[in-house]
Image 1: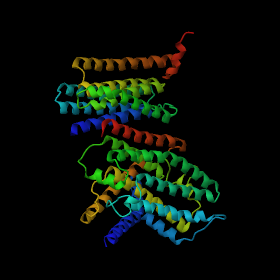
Image 2: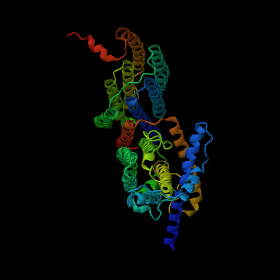
Image 3: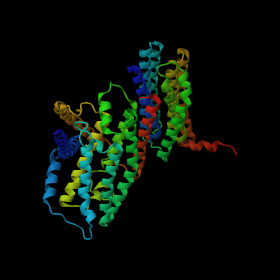
Image 4: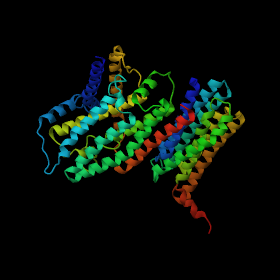
Length: 316
Length: 218
């Protein structure tokens, strides 16, 4: 019975993350529209796009292999798995021991590799161009992401996300400058990994500058819908990861079911703030040339290393 | 850890962050703003140290820092770049990631170097000595990588900031006479260097210091 109960809570949390993901994307787009003096399409627009795409037929390119058709499901599956592992509302759920933060990076990498393979599968020029750019950005952002994780790992002395969240959320209040450095680095990695503005423009269809859009150019119908949805879930999961590592206050612990409503409210507030902040960052910065991306991600890596060094020197 | 020590650590980390930002900043205007922020953090740190240790004279140092390094020097520099018409100048820095990596190496070096010294110190701020040394070395690196005159001067001033931070963190600041002397020196130095800028530009039609190498006699 206890097993069934924890399973249902796990299922609920995963469903919540997957279902609200397009809402977060819509909120970011809406905030951007407001900041740019446009009226915007409303926060529900991503749902409408998904519904439209799910109704459409799939058009497959000649010579598309099974991998091309399989890839969207795998990407979506990876993101759902990550969404069930990252503590969002409660810690110590059923899936939590399945992977620590380092394995999480691996799951992200799996999804990315399959998206790049699928893009190259059809053999169009844009597909392989996008795949190469994606791998360039990924090869730089992944080490930075690992470095970002190491500072909280050092502070808590554990690589399990649950332990990190529990320890950081329930310790005596203390200022951690090292965590601030990691947080800045994490924001930079988040922008790069989710194809947001300084690295990639999610709204562009201009061939020469796009990265993520070039990868999915050949997809249509339900495949495209799944990929778009997976992208939204990825953004939400990244925001949730940032919240879990750097602002974990208000999350319910295992067994404290009465705290869940509060945790949901706090989560909604934090995600709304994160989305607004993301929109502000994207409005303030311009897209970089692709060759500036190594510099940007190098900065993220160095900030993460600095965070670690500061922790080792100051012990804070 | 008491809250004041935590705040001092935070300020030290911020100063290190600003030092790295200056190292990678291409625009002269943003560089001056960063310098102003560095002074502001330095003054805040001074106030925190003064408040937590009861050293009254540090309040004067903080006020001096605030007036000189946050208001007067940035204003002079902004006026200078406006007069020299270089305020939108962008320096072509090559290979920022390598410079940053070298900066990290310098930070590790400074941390190791300061470890035995800070163990001897009895102040609550002793662990920040490593960061102060790192700031001095990073400003030095910044002066080495720049070719234009104005960023070099800003690097020099940032180095002085690092020294000031080192003094506050190890011995709760220098005697007032020394501090006033240094402040005056920095002010006069910037004024004289400002005159130099005009002379350099008058002679070479540019603020690029590579032209100075032509002055060598073979």
